[in-house]
Length: 466
Image (cartoon, rainbow, N blue to C red; front, side):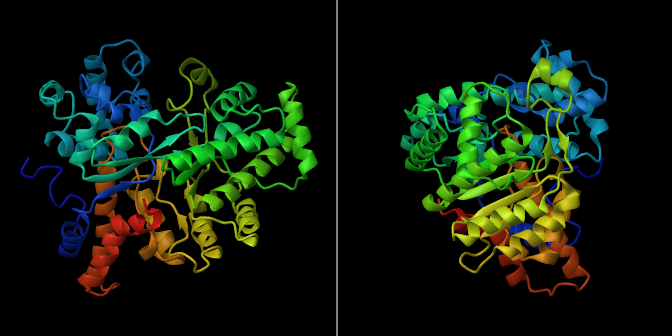
């Protein structure tokens, strides 16, 4: 092969794209403002025994591909050896062409290990040995991996009951990458989820508040927000199918909560009222503390009941949902804005059919008080691939100001996922470079380069103010 697959100008199709990427984007630090990394592993500077531990375990993107190819679960989440799991992933990789996994796999091997061979059954043994040598050399601990990609900030995601002990350790350490947290209270909102009352028992202990009434619940949540805030938290996150906004009275909510604490069944209509009330309370509180609120909308989770029962959540059985989004989201944002209690907001959309809905919705509540106050978040989950990111960028460009966009994030549990920032930056620069070439944008490299730098880094830096 005359040219390496991953090379300096990968995905960059002309000289304008190349100039934008190499001069204005490539060397910008990374602000990864939403992920699911383990703060314990960062605090303890964990090392990994082999490539499977750091790359395949926990990665449900890879797991779905392997299952589709007909690989037995033993070699995915089962009791096969780590090497056997890696060899089966290597066997799968050539079959992932045109899935983003193919690009991600080779970007990650190149970025972290300097390996530019294409991964396959033929190269698997060599790649296993090459990665093993580097991991054994002690150059790929969690902190070293973050430093390799020029990360400036990573923001993990924690439940309200978390004691944040590892964030506290990191705050006192000399690690030069800032590690913060985002408050994720979904378990306190979703009243009909399994184990809700048991979860509230844990929340009681964390907050030091007996939760016997709805007001007690709000008090407990506020105490946890205060605790997170005192530990440097500036963001929250919600993973919801859609925004809840039903009409309710305070007496309604008190009665619904009392009924739940008594172990009685809650109707779907009552659950929606309750979820609406808690969400409004939380978002008004976020505004008070000056946090950024994030909403990940549109996932249809745990579709395969049999496999969910065997393996649990977050193991690869989720898909895009087709929920109605516009009216409730509008009413919800409007209710907060009407009280001047709408904080900075990022809305992530999983259904590409709703891209234009989200791109226009944010414009309704960008009131001139903050640059890009309400953001249409980058393509995530099933949409954090070339086509999905391009469609998100186009919808935002056509109906808003891409120049105010705060850019990419990993939303990942993997310490090897940060080349997704590089992937996004290359796609962004190629999109703009192509339009310069066609004469649809002026050849004003200074201004367009500034826009690229802003989207890659500066806008997020200004927006989050860590």
